[in-house]
Image (cartoon, rainbow, N blue to C red):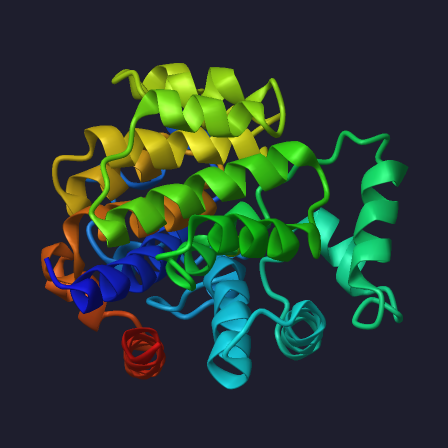
Length: 313
Ligand SMILES: [Mg+2]
């Protein structure tokens, strides 16, 4: 498969998963079943309740908007410049900010954030007694697996730096590195093994092991994705992404199954969509879901520029 087909697949897979996953964000499995008795088949199915009508049908949410802050910074600087990415997060937060998670909200609203992102990020993590480990960095990390993909050490270092801009917890960093690792393996045509992911995760936090294993067993119910206490947990989203990557037979049914499971479905599907797109390529994405993205043209243009830079390096 061509490199550009995979890169387009990753970026569009993320955007589609995010825009469609919004349909069930915050719902339990039972609520999803009651709201969508025939499942979610397209953007026009998304119920227009108080939460969801802030987005037009086919619009992606904060997950992809923040991923694009990173991508825009890379397109302009041709290298990872953490303070520039932080500045773009702030600009997005002030201009839009819809769907932002509590943890990221607390950080981005600090007036000195763009000047001292790491200090602020670490402060809020410590303030949470080192408990805060939300999925707000994992949701935007697919791009860090693409940039510098031939260089393993660079991918890991870039991913760590960009994650810690807002999420300091080692469970957040480890989950981002695992997803970036899979994406770079796909781009390099290298197989991904459970043992490699377990070894990688163990470098960051012992809690990661259990959630990697969950993503390598077929029963999605065991992932407890709609658990109201932990549905925004970075490791729960990691297991959702791994499950889709390992057991998704086609893009459409994998995303529909993750939506039906409830929980933080936009983020779970954003991560899963990126990983499925990496594995299957752009040509395997449902055409109606690609064309139905309201900002399809904008994403196409950015993906094209990214591929151009990467191919020329
Ligand atoms: Mg979101």
